[in-house]
Structure formats: structure tokens, C-alpha cells
Length: 360
Ligand code: F6P
Image 1 (cartoon, helix red, strand yellow):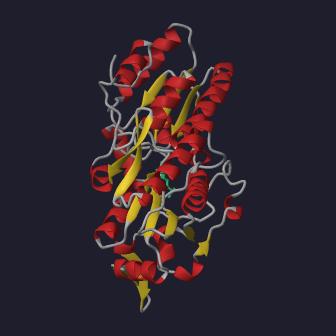
Image 2 (cartoon, protein in one colour):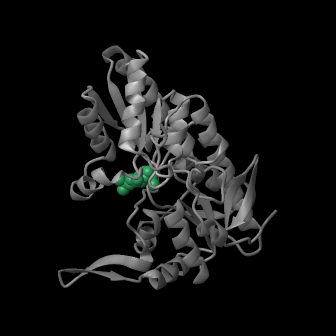
Image 3 (cartoon, rainbow, N blue to C red):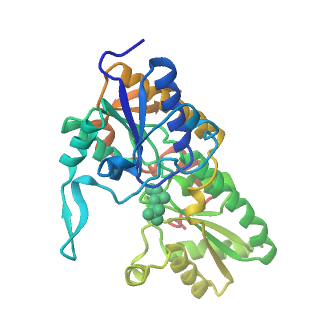
């Protein structure tokens, strides 16, 4: 099946990296070349690469050999390169400029018939705006945060979850040996998906999420009651985007302290117990993709090329149930996905005794 209009495609990876990006690049290159005989241009560093088109390079089958299990992205990425609000220095002063026309011109100059945009919500929104300006775009949803509503899962999430769950497992043994209160801060931006899943998977005792406001009194009561039952260690998974109680919010605004440190200090002051905090950070974004993410990335990459072959531009590949389906980029960019406090997942966690720091 050969499309009549698409012959040369570009691919770019934007926003924060995550495991599985290279697997998508490999799938796109392999299906574009093997099934359609197209040429694939690798655009460097997200949309920045279309401001510096000389850095682009053709991707051959050889270029994508052995990259399936490799973390990061062979194309580089940035989470600062929005061409509609680009920071440039003029006469020693930083100003914000709309360089999107230049991006479109460069894409034409490079001979691109379409662009595969691999990224999270910010990157897909930029892709949609470029599509609206005349550059045919197809999206592939990426982020460890899993906060894109249009897809049941983004690739990267499962790999991040493995790292976070492993950390909870490891903290268990040391927390128990020392009878300490241990906090683990995980990523996820404004969504609590990594914290919720890793907390349940790792058998944490409490999970603090952006979607469920907690109180220090209730959390400390929970810890004290565990102590009274001789369960004298407590493991708490904290989402980085958790909403802090008023008494901690001022401190958080003043210093850029990780939220888990602020919560840990407050718990130590109230319970007079030994507290330790681990901030997992970018280990969640690095390293090899999980088997699930390798498969999902491959399916997404192939689906993106199928969309291009059907001239179905302005769409993103999405996982719905067991199927990968097209979803319009406009729909995909319209809503984010957050943890529903009434969901069966949260109810299941509560039922087995996990505290969200919100109830006695
Ligand atoms: O969106 C992915 C993510 O890792 C978030 O979970 C986190 O808040 C953010 O990116 C970190 O960004 P940076 O790599 O710029 O520190």
C-alpha cells in the first residue's frame, strides 16, 4: 500500500525524554522504509531542529539497528523549544518571539511531506498548532506521567513505574530494619499515576497524590496508630505534584525544596521519629524501556506510519483497551488525565489499608 502524497517524512522527539523513544524511532523508520520506500529525516532536539535544519540527518535501517532497548533518544530532545514562544537574545536582552513561520518554511525547504511528532501534551499542542498552519503532522504519545487523556497509556509510564516500584521494594527492607519512616518522592508532574501505581505495587503504607488533599494531622495519626500496633515503620510514596497543606506551602514557595523533604521534616517534628527521604528524580526517565513499553512504542510507531500512508494527518496514535486507534490531535490536546479519587484503583488501595492522608 503506497500513499500518493507522502514520500519524505520527518520525525522528532520533544519534551522530557523517556524510555521507548528509540523504539518508536526504530518502528517508524523500519515501517516507512520497508513497507513504503519513504525517506525518513531525523530532526534533532524537538522543534529546535526545524530552526536549525542543517542538523537533520537521513535515517537508514542501519541507523536504527540495536536501538530498541536503548533509553533516551538518538535524536536528542528539549523541553524548552516552543517555536511559538521562542526565547531569543536580542541586543543582550532575552525576548520571546514567534518563530513558527520559520519552522514551516524550513520543513518545506527540507522537502518534508509530513512530520511525526513524538511527545507529551506540550509537544502535541505545538504539533497541532503547526498542523493548523499547514504542516501535516501525526502524533505519538509519550510521557512517564501518563497524563494524556486520549490514550489509556503513554509509553514510558510502565518503565518509570518499574523503577519507582523497585525503589519502594528496596526502601521496605531498610525501613523495617531501622524502624524508620521513609518517604519516596516520585515524578508525575501534576498527576499522581506513578505514585499511585508504584505505591500499590510496592506495598506502601501511605500514598500522597495531587488529586487527594491530605492533612498532616491525619497522616501522623495514621503513623502513630501503626506504631501502636507494633508496625513501627512506615513507607510513604509522595507524588512530586502533591498539594501541600497550608502550613507547608509557604516554605515550599520560598525554597525549591523537594516536597517530600518538607513533609518528612514536618512528620519528624510531630512524631519525634526518625525519618528519611529519597527523591527518585530522573532515574525514572533513564535506562532501558520495559517489555510493555517496547511493544507499545513499536505499535505506536507503526500506527503513525499507517496514518501517514492514509493521509490521515492531525491525528495521534492512542491505546484504547487492547487496540491502537487514531484520535484527533485536537481531542488529544483538549484534556489531561488525572487520578479519580472515586476510581476502583483508589478504592482498592483504601480497602487494603493504604492511607491517602485524608481520613482518620
Ligand atoms: O514530564 C516528565 C517529567 O519527568 C515530570 O515527571 C517532571 O516533573 C519533569 O518532567 C521534570 O523535568 P526536567 O527534566 O526539566 O527536570
